[in-house]
Image 1: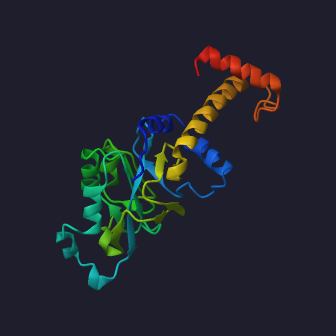
Image 2: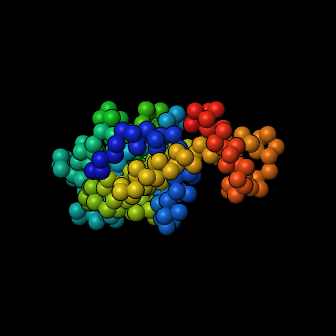
Image 3: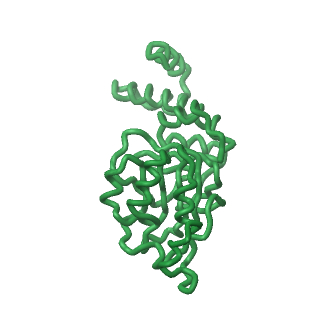
Amino acid sequence: MSSLSPETRDKLKTVSTATLSTALYKRGFRIQVIQGVHPLGSHPKPMVGPAFTLRYIPAREDLNPITVFRDPEHPQRKAIEECPAGAVLVIDSRKDARAASAGSILIRRLMTRDVAGIVTDGGFRDSPEIAQLAIPAYHSRPSAPPNLVLHQAIDSNVPIACGDAPVFPGDVVVGDGEAVIVIPAHLADEIAEEAVEMTAYEDFVAEQVERGRSIRGLYPPTDERVLADFAEWRTKMGR
C-alpha cells in the first residue's frame, strides 16, 4: 500500500478527473481512466485512496461451488476484510457484468471499515441499496446473479486490469461524478500539485469567458496580458 499523504489526498479531492487526465497525458499516460464505469448514488466528495485490488477469472465449475464461501480465506471475503481503511477496493471483473462482483452486504462491510470506495468493471447486485450507502461505488451496470455463476475470485492485492486501465496495488484512485482515474503511486504528489494549479487557472478562465472574453490567448494562455490578469486574480481570490 502506498503512503498517500493527507496533504495529497486533500488536494486530489479538490480537482476533477478530467484535469487529472490532462496532467497524466502530459507525462505520456493515456489509458489511466477506467472505462465503462458509472457512480451509484450521489456523493458530495470525490473518492480518493490507494488501490487494494481483487481479481476474478472465469469460474471453473468444479472449483467454484457455492460452498467455497464457507472458507474464511476465500479471496473475495478476504479482500473485504483486509482492504485497509482509506483505500479503494478495485475489482477486475473482466468487464463482464453478467454476474455480480459484490452485493450490498459486502459493500456495507467496507463502509463500516472506513474504506474510501469501491469500483468494478463488472456490476453489483443490490444496486438500489448500494446507491443509498455512504460509500462511493462505481460499476458498469446492475447484475442480478451471484458472482460465482461466471466469476471466480482468485487473488487480491496484485496488479490487475480494470476497465482497460492498469492498476497496481498502492496506485492512487480518484473518482468523481464523471469518471474514475488511476494515478501511478510515484506520481501522486506532483500530479496533485499540478492539478490544483490547473484548476485555479481553469476557474479563472471560466470566469473570464462568462464575462465575454475570447478564448484566443486565454485558453491556452499564450498572451502575456492573460498571465498578468491571472496573477492579479489569484491574489484577489487567495489562490
